[in-house]
Image 1 (tube, rainbow, N blue to C red):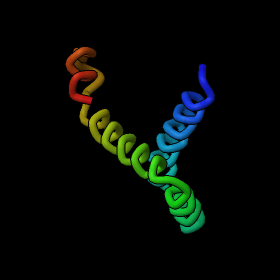
Image 2 (image 1 turned 45 degrees about the vertical axis):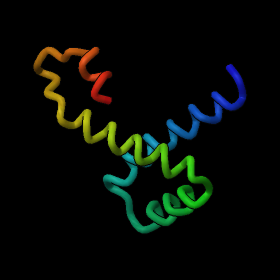
Image 3 (image 1 turned 135 degrees about the vertical axis):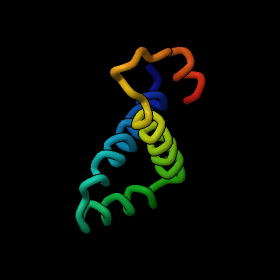
Length: 75
């Protein structure tokens, strides 16, 4: 795996972590999050993508059969 792909994966992972952290974050976490966003436009873009994914996934009822292909097409 190339270095850039590893970096991209780490940024996406961190953005996903921030989505969860911010659900219960206090002032210190909010400040750290803002600092992280200011580091790169890529951070902002990945975070917005992860927020959209989180909202989309929240709307899925996992007790029902999920059409994975349809879900992936929506995402």
